[in-house]
Amino acid sequence: MKGENSTSQPSAGLRPADGYAGDLSPQLAYEWMQAGLAVLIDVRTDAEREWVGYVPGALLLAWKQWPGMAMNPLFDEVIATAVPKGMKAMMLCRSGVRSIAAARRATELGLEAYNVLEGFEGDPDAEAHRGATGGWRYRGLPWRQK
Image 1 (cartoon, rainbow, N blue to C red):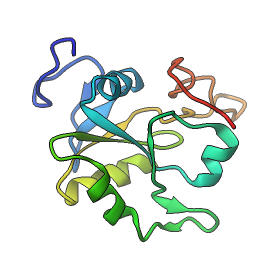
Image 2: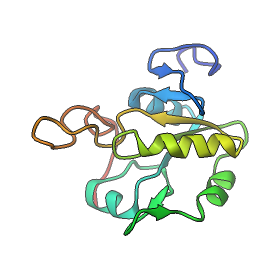
Image 3: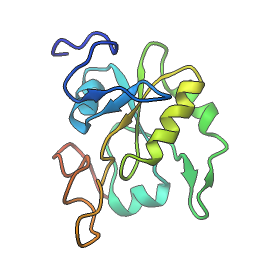
């Protein structure tokens, strides 16, 4: 993949972070996913994915559950078995904030975990609408809606 052979080397779309391996641009996350270097883990709730859309091929594993946003008691068990040894784990949420907590937890569990910047929908614009200033969808990366 375009000269990317070690996460210790800085590259376009990757920046260091505290408590996990780093922050990735949506574009780099997609490249890693396509190259078979990483598993994309969508940590949004089932409701968010149903209403807004999802990334084909991503592991769907809520960090918190709807309603009430309680921690998913199966998160540790599922992520520990879903990411093959030697592969990176990339966390995707709505705007790239909740996924930081998930990346930190995955790191504690021994995975090389990253946060996908901007998330699926990006930050809200001046009218408080998401999807117009950043995010997986905004960047034109593959997604589906039911």
